[in-house]
Image (spheres, each protein chain N blue to C red):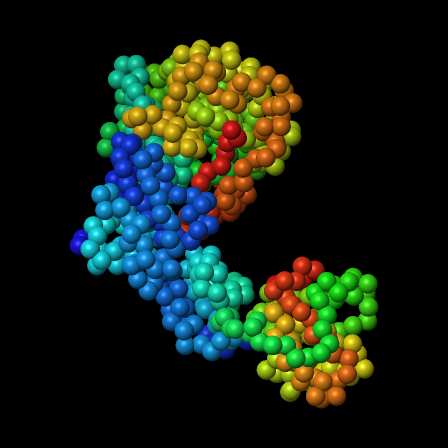
Length: 189
Length: 375
């Protein structure tokens, strides 16, 4: 199983409703946009509430892992990245990428979202390198290959595609809009 | 202003008396949609507690000033928080003690009627979940039918009326709630009866309940006559008590009929269900008072809180008993069925003795409404 990295871990174990949500709300307030919070709770009802709370506040609820009695909820603080202007010239739509995957074309899908976003839902065989780790892990990628970069809304993947182009990758395409609207096959835990 | 706790018993009385109540349910929307406190004159507002963390000002205008207000959540904690904020804002409010968890477990005993020579029949209304269980009492002895897992309630009640529980019966292997039958039988030394066709996989010994069996209690014999009526399960058995009451289990309800799919065999059991409802029940006296093991909607409660109706009345009024065409009947009970009850497979296994979840887990398995019927 992939190792999920969270930026902040909140311990809400042993606490009854409403405290886990109250604490989560506070922790989210202090978190930087786009970062991931892991909430550890034992209240079984916290799962549905976390999801509903995140939806009502605009944060992303990524998923929940159950480890024995402990529920680990993963949430990503909402960011305004959808509105950023995309600069990388080569783009492809979700549907076009899906067609390539369906046709078994020899391509690489690079998912630059956070690991917590990736593990719960991603395109089968997509490689996970979060945007923040791209520079350090760029050697894992091959310049000869056709690389399709995907994130949630096309913004982080735009930055990643630009970065790869700077490093001499010529065959890099940004997938727009990305996983938020992806209707093709996915896998996850 | 003030905030006080309201018990499940008090809420139940308001339902029975058709009183007005304004319920502010602060659980999340999907939980509220799935299952809530039902009362004929209850009004509702559903705002999840996590939308009220910064204050209740925005909803003050939606809460009527002239009505009693009850704040409800899953386990009490969030409702106390919200009720406290509302009382700070100047309202008189209550919160539901123990939340929906307590509501799901509340049992309200109601006397159905007298049996011959001083005998009595009680219905235990599990108001939050719609489960009904029965206690037949005669001369210091009692038989308990379709007991829930809240065993203390029955034991205390029997104690209070000075009766010893000598027979415990389940009309069928339940799929929507965990039976307390076996535990009560163990505690009291009573015989535990089960229909053998439903009990092929159980891990404990029991008294096989067959068609035509008579269970008698008390020195003045009250007769509990078993009538094999398969369809909801293959073993489902009804009872005729004192030649006056028909305990119909999950075969026939007031406004609906049993569903045949909870053991996974809808197609196979449709014929049995039809035979039970359209032939075996037709042969009975129309004067019998039907007492089912469930109610689905609050309108099925009579004015005194009892769930009962004359068999003859059901023959004319219950839609499920009035479908001439066999194919149409088959369609009704096999297609478009409501969602299956929460964790029903695990509940069946628990009732077979195959798994032994702890109390917290049992509570969680039973959460939500019962869904044993088709209308």
